[in-house]
Length: 342
Image (cartoon, rainbow, N blue to C red; front, side, top):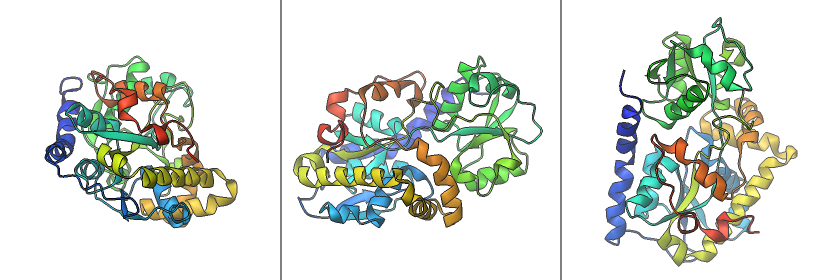
């Protein structure tokens, strides 16, 4: 097995290559920020729920009501979205801290407008696996995975780091007490789990339609709960380049207001069916599957703001060893990030 976080470091560097290459374009004037009133190109990654509020704002006509001309641009990968924000191909996109922070460190000027999702991760094991303890307290249950293989999307990904944090907090050593196996995105991960290629695996609300809770042994039940290693997690931030923010303050302000409108829309019980439909379309599931996922995911949706304490709490969840935290004031866009702008 590789040294404790060696594979994570290598994978993180590889994932950030496209983003850091775009820093050169920024320094050489490659960013086209556009002008007030022109199209705001917003990145949307299909198959995952992190961009849900932007989709809701578009589908429910909330961008139009706020007078901002938004075009949703679906890139294939979150790393591609991050690079496009830096290069100016996207006006706004979501960036995970694991790519955003190194990008800032390398000299790109990007700022967080607001938070998206908190922890949506659970851990499951094969049916019949002996799991002792309380799933709402992973410190008691993660010990049951000693000696097991654990499926993650890819070696070195954030998923592996986050599960490692839970293992460590439970008193295990992720480098020696378990073995991580790359099982890919949810579709291939579910296939691998059903074929018993791993003993345990990551699990999220968007996977329950094709891998029902009745077919797994739950190790954790922590989505939306506090007091565990992943409760401080912010999966990604709405992000824009400094040039776009400087050139288009009105558009940016209206975009943020529409995202807050979408958040309010999402939290209203009468809109549950619409939220399930929009989520299902985004993750490639049925409306019924989307509704089931939304019922659990709702508790993980964060207010579109950026709390300083939460910003600083991301460091141990970004990499190991934990990186230096970017300056909060310089790396967040105050008109949007510091509370409801409406």
